[in-house]
Structures are given as C-alpha cells and as structure tokens.
Image (cartoon, rainbow, N blue to C red; front, side, top):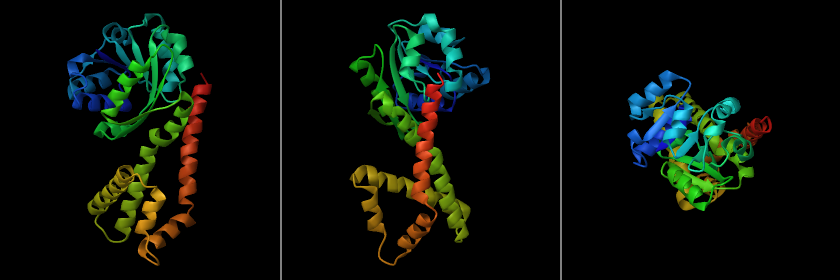
Length: 266
C-alpha cells in the first residue's frame, strides 16, 4: 500500500502520475490531510482511499510520502512519532527539511528525501533523490522508479538538494512567467492571444527537448539560431540589456538559500 500524509498540489501531481502509470491502483493508495475537502476531491478525481488520520496511513501503508508544508512538519511528525517501524519506507518531499531532523521522529523507518516538481503531473517532472538513515540501495532504487515514471530522477548527496529545490523545484514558476512574457510579446507584435500562448509554450517545450535529446550545451544551440545581424541576435541583445541571465541565476540561488533556511530553522 502507498500512503500520502498531505494532499496538496505536489501530492496530487505525484498521485496522478503514479496512478496514470499504473505504479499503484487507486484503491491501494491512502491519503490524509487536515483539509477534509481536499481528501474528498482526491477521492472523487483519482479514486484513492481516504484515511481517517495520519496514523491510519501508517497502519495501512508500507511506503509513506510526507507531503505537508515544511512549516508544519514538527507538528505533524510529533503527532505520529511513536508509530513508525522498520516496514515503513518514508519518502519526504518537504522542501528544506533535512534527513537528520526527520530521523528524530521516524525511528527505525527507512528514510529517503526527494525534491520533485509539479510537471510530474504530465509525466515531465524533474527530481533529486537522497537516501538517508536505514535506507539501502533497494529502497533508493524503488523511490527512483516511482519518480522516474513521472519524469527524470537523479540520485544525489543530500547537501545538494537545496540547490535542486532552487532550480527544478521552483523554476517551473519562472518558466511559466517566461512563457507568459513571450506570449505578451507576441500579442504586442500583433498575434492573437491564443496563438501567441500556444507558440510560446511549444517553443519552450521544443527548446528544452532539443537540450535533452541532443546533449549539446545550450549556448551552442543558441548560437545555431542566432545568425549574424539577424532577428535573434537583436533579441538576445535586448535580453542582455535587462540582465536576463543574471536575474535568473539570482532567482535560483534565492530559492536554494530559502530551502536551506527552512532546514536550519528545524
């Protein structure tokens, strides 16, 4: 059985991917959340089972995702502190919460920390995975299989997960902003809004696919588009005037630093 403590947007994204890829049947998945309406929504849309409380999830499930907001982690974990045993494989997707903190509450359970992102909802996620106390390579492989079914998953040292949070964990929001800005530019240049948005989103998708499938450096691919004295290099110049790359870099680092702050507060 597969359990989720917390049924928010990230949990929903993972659940939809897991169910869609038949990694678990809906009747094998149990979800608890402080918001009863949220659980009812997941029941209705995905067919998963509603747990009576967090302890019910632990009693029924061997793999348990901790998917609550990091700010409430101490309260949630304290409430179920003495109910873990070695049968449990705990998968934390709470940003910034270190494995050492989790281990204080989960005792003999096997711990794995994951930083996924919401595009796993469409099987295009990106996740970092770090093994923790009591987890062996088979446990890490099992979690990687779950995450790989909804995107790409990379096993890393835990100390790198804050950087993963700042990059792939947070960056979907930045990319949505970029797509919105591209579409706005298209509208400004005369395109109808639906056309501009479709072209913008498909262009970002296609460019990302080029990077992943060719393995070429993004700068090299950029140079192939930017011909001398052409339209693309004129646009690149405008972006550079606005410190485009520098601002994006700062956004990623800010996210990573905030993730580290969340952990240090524990």
